[in-house]
Length: 383
Ligand SMILES: NC(=O)c1ccc[n+]([C@@H]2O[C@H](COP(=O)([O-])OP(=O)(O)OC[C@H]3O[C@@H](n4cnc5c(N)ncnc54)[C@H](O)[C@@H]3O)[C@@H](O)[C@H]2O)c1
Ligand SMILES: [Zn+2]
Ligand SMILES: [Zn+2]
Image (cartoon, rainbow, N blue to C red; front, side):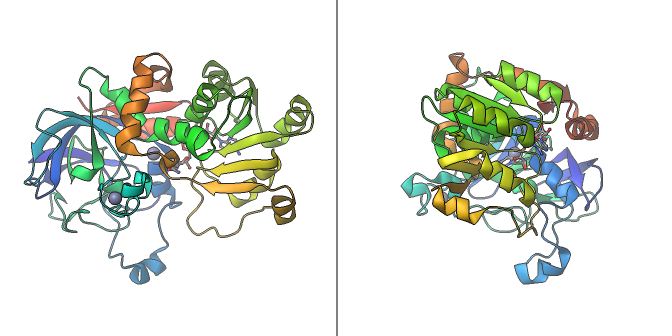
């Protein structure tokens, strides 16, 4: 079938909205008509190269080419076609995307760690995770890669059935889209990976689409102090509406205040969710955590960055821990419906995350607004 998609042809370019061809689904695949796609910062990392291995390393990594690539990994839509061997979803079902697949069989899925599923095909190679051949082409016949093997910046894509999670039909699909990445990742970074406990002092560094949900997670878990840090005033104001008890413009500014409000104990949990996590931010990040504190690394660092400023003496002597997380260490099949259930009961603010909606043709304007800090989340409505 013919459809339209926002495609990236290489680094430092705009999204190019073009007609593409999508094949019928093969075994274990479905075609999704995406209705809504969130403008997550991770797609922006493709443009800046933060998430792109340097070209000189491609051969060694077995990458022929990453481009052209359909963007988008935060999304929700309706199943338009089902390939052989697919069970659990049917044409017309509403689904959330899941940028981490869950095959249900690998050692990670079978031990409750679907976020680490072995079926993850990543973004670095063209081809489906099912059989490594392509289902999407430009008009000139060039095979298309897909971000996170989802490509939610297209009206339709063909994806593995391990990357869709069925959701209830009465839920707004733009809300489901946000849960598929930003909400789950932020919420889980605080509640699951950070294991926030009632009475904890929690610092969230960077309150955009991900961090705002770490704020919500910390609040739901009963944190005593939820300290939002963001250089953008609008984000700080919004963080207070989403459950923060304090907001500061920088980690430097927050330091003495956190000291004072905790009688010198500092934070129990620090969740790092800035747009780009540069290595030199970790010294202040780890410094904001007190003895026995946990620092959760959620924000993406430039892929080639190997240095980070952490005082290892303090890390050891003060018994701290630094933990990475993908998808907030949650399980998409259990936790996407769980978070949507909390939204239904009024326990999570999700409509309020959407600052502005865009047509697919206006996607570059949406990313400009993200760079300028104007949106908590921008959302493309495909309809
Ligand atoms: N680990 C995962 O599974 C996962 C999943 C999704 C996104 N991410 C990553 O999480 C990060 C955040 O994504 P997002 O969509 O929320 O981005 P965003 O652009 O919506 O928000 C980032 C926020 O960080 C703030 N910020 C920038 N520099 C800062 C600093 N020095 N101190 C404090 N705040 C700062 C910005 O003002 C902005 O509000 C990105 O790196 C993204 O790629 C990780
Ligand atoms: Zn994302
Ligand atoms: Zn698996």
